[in-house]
Length: 149
Image 1 (cartoon, rainbow, N blue to C red):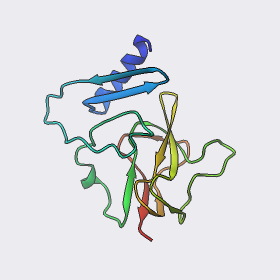
Image 2 (cartoon, one colour):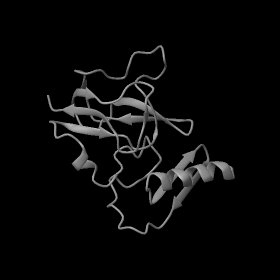
Image 3 (cartoon, helix red, strand yellow):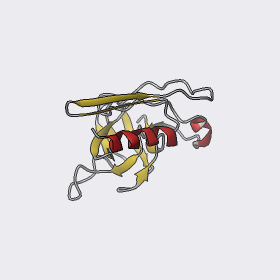
């Protein structure tokens, strides 16, 4: 890992108000931490920790900004590009109406040239896909809404 890559990670931390960030690729790993002058938000449990090597605090007030709909939202654990399928010619991992089980892969997010699989956090039915294929997404942005069914 070179200085430019470390600077990019530090910039992402600052831009998105992250207090810590862990990055691993191959046999290289780095953990960055910084103090925040404001009161930090409580740390969120890392639901996709195995699939995604970053840790971060949730966006403050996010639950107040989201529409109150039935079901569980799957939020993006990082900034990146959303892909609904493993390759351009492959069919999407999931579609609206598909039944999923906890751990099923819903999509991939490309972040810093890494493809990170995002798993379902609960069993249920895909009620809504909140983003489009190839869309640049932000940390904490809703990706899917899963309802019990």
